[in-house]
Figure 1 (cartoon, rainbow, N blue to C red):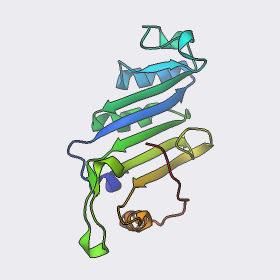
Figure 2 (cartoon, helix red, strand yellow):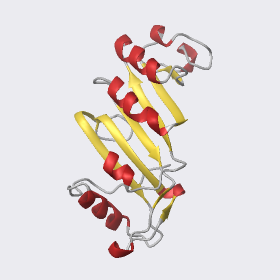
Figure 3 (cartoon, rainbow, N blue to C red):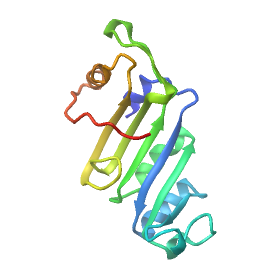
Figure 4 (cartoon, helix red, strand yellow):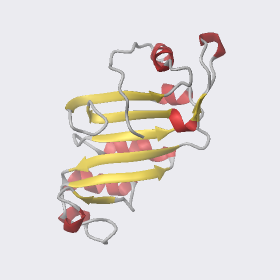
Length: 168
């Protein structure tokens, strides 16, 4: 992820977190990273939420939807998760122009990187023992795959996934 992020314009970037926290140990570690965590009980807000001032440890499992955090919170959050599933999305300023690869700049509205932790999909429905990188890049010329293939090559990999339209 660090290499991919180094290729993006992230001066004003921020990071968003979505997770399902099931254990008190994971919750304690996450709260060290994000003491004012935004969450609600998996059974629904009426069973507990950060907005109501409830104790998250008494409402497990909880769902986390915490957005607009500083970039430096991402790695500690990921390290705190253990085997619980999550999605960490870096909201980039842009994917810069790469003239030698024929790639135009992609503005902030369409420039994201998401790491799904212990999950294959963006919504934590497909459990996995590892992580998956999702590249969000909507090119005005309609050639999103050119950017994805170029990024994969920059990290010594190749595109092995599938193209999906995801609501942002």
